[in-house]
Image 1: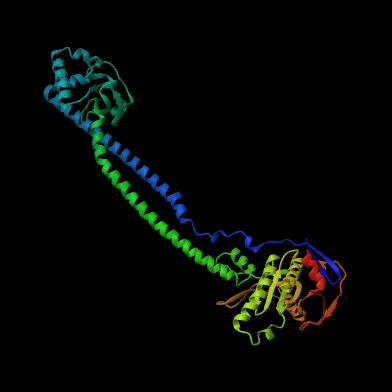
Image 2: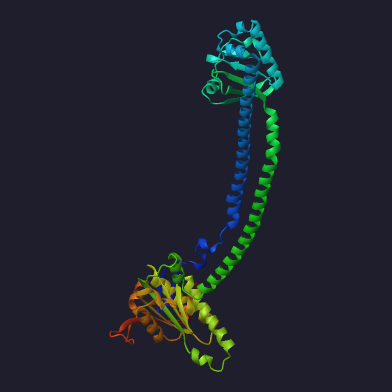
Length: 456
């Protein structure tokens, strides 16, 4: 709660302070986090890709090995079939149609065929061999006690239907592939079950795929390393360029109003900035006798003096949420928005006069305050535009400022009524360009006013 003394009565005024620098930063003010996204997305992606490649190669290799084993088994079954046809053709045919193979092997020709089968198993280096006849009848097995039994299995069913089948099994001889293949070019439903050690081709697979996997992982690692170098370079460049843009933006924001900046931020790219009609309280201030002050003064001294007076005014306006539209030579044009705009504008004007008086400058300012409807938007041509506030209210505020003497505020009655309900001295002014006079109230910074405010 701030208290001001104007004339002979106290003014009770409540205003809310807000530092414009505390506005939340726009997300575009921060550089794009390319490096962070690289480590968060790309690096895990490469790791997943490497794992997928290793798994895919291992599965592909395993599939190729199984296919190789099945082809080998099919070739071996053909070799066994041809050898038996060549040596004991009639016996081999009789065995494939037999329903009691164990009895057949007790005959001389059956014994000869059994010896031939034993020899083939040895010559081909098979771990085990089992031959099935119709309905999964075991015609021959390396474990000869199984001969004559029925051993139906999914692998046998697949082989009978023309689909080669492979099952990995752990046995006393180690891990083996159990392969079921139908004897090719054979009129009988004969299926051979062969066993092959897993380790042989697996070692070949590992020795073949390891260099490929290592090379691919190395290549991915090199690509990732090069991408990291590129991302770091790009991130540094992005940060550098963003900082330059932010520096330019901060400098430009000092040259245009906050309303202009917020409007451009809220608009989409290439969208036109549409003007809007709003009710604002306008504050015009102007240094009295500045032209005379400049006489016989160096440019450096003039600029220094002007910057000091303008700095005090800008600080007070921004402290009370005012928006500076323009600085025109030694004059300041600002406006205040919102339900409390009249009180904010008056508080800013009070602080301007009070703070300037404390410095004992050789020149003071006159201030005009007026509330009315204005148009906020861009004006100008296609190549050069200005974001500004225009309207009759601007002209009136400027005229009131011209009527104000040094260290004096001239405010219209309606605006002042929103600030204070106390009875005041009213004055009618006939302003240039207006057909009807405007009722105003003059507020002079006097010793009583200053003393009370200093005490507070």
